[in-house]
Length: 169
Image (cartoon, rainbow, N blue to C red):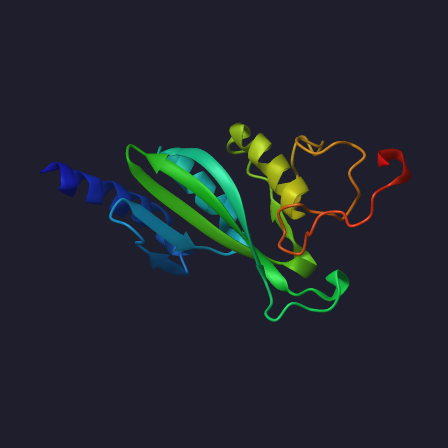
């Protein structure tokens, strides 16, 4: 089998392992496979990949997808946050795509399956406001303890702080 055939086989192997939970699949590039799964299936999919010894978790990232047009106030915002779990095997990347609505922005922790996910989950929580259920360490990672509750710097609604406090003058 040539190298290209082996590479295709790696992504096919990953897809075969997780196919029962896949709602959609896309190949944005020859060496990438993106699959959409439900939040309720996240733990089963990660467990299946681990049991199959397919790849390693390289990152967890978030994409804010607010409703269009944007509402007048942050309290009335609708939209979703798409969470991307990137797994790599050689030069292949499998991305699990899970969407959660703003009004129920929570996901189960995958740390019981992959302990190395803790830093990614903590970043996701404080930067996007995703509640990670069952995470072993919910403490802040990047933002200071004095950071205001409910303010998430990587959400598109974040526009910085408009008022200068007396201490900063």
